[in-house]
Length: 362
Image (cartoon, rainbow, N blue to C red; front, side, top):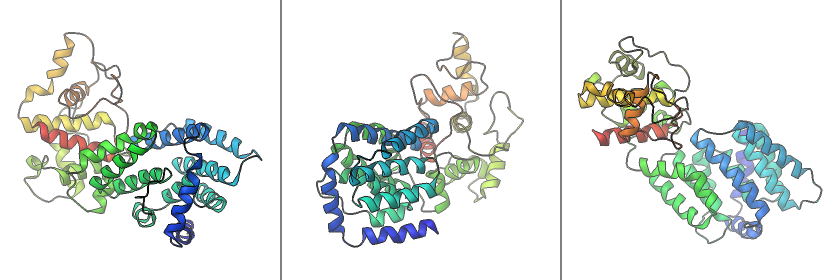
């Protein structure tokens, strides 16, 4: 009920007059470029980008909320400033899953100054992606304040899998925004580039998997089967349910590593890890290449040196060969320096990109 009432509340703001909203945006551009505001916006944007990468530091967000609340306790803030900091606080609470708190803060921020960009962004984030796209004002005018909303348009387009339009929106916004926006959202922008020619469905279940911040084993199989032909050797081209595909992939050894070879294990629950994805992708690659020596090639190569090229994946790791194989064949990427983050979660967009990389390498 709260979200529905918020939607009606926003409708009264968004649809009274797009022109008046645009006027508000121009008025509220005055603080942009201010070092103090930039400090808070850059940190907010950094947290937001980390959320899309599945790397959000929740402790740091909590600390930031406390800091912002301390600013809000000041009696010297103008209504515009109070709307700004309230919007920031609401966005942080939304990142932590506190939707009801964020909804209350959104109403407060908009009542203080309805055209304040951070207040608008918070209000938009409380809506579904399709609702966001329907209420976003026309951003073609050249106002500094409009460009953060162009990022919101890009993110909403990404969420509904309109990757080409999202890519254009990101690139347009980045030209006119501080570098910290590009640094924070380049991950999503680059996903759009990778996926703009790749998605072959409007199925809501598949789109949900693609937009997941951490896929499950069901998502992995659903994305692989719907977006590639890589499972055809085990399906024979038959249309099978996701659970049937999991059982067949398991029986074919696609979830095996050096330790579990031949034992079979498909009982994975919850969000799956990067190392399990590497295992699955490498087994797919080897079976499609028809070269069984690839199952041990990289372990044999690096054993001679007695050292792994990745600092968090040692030679004794049963997934070593699959992880190194995926990295060397450019199926998967190393997120940071020489760290693979084998236990990290996998966003759906990332996994689709890896599937496409695998297909290109065959």
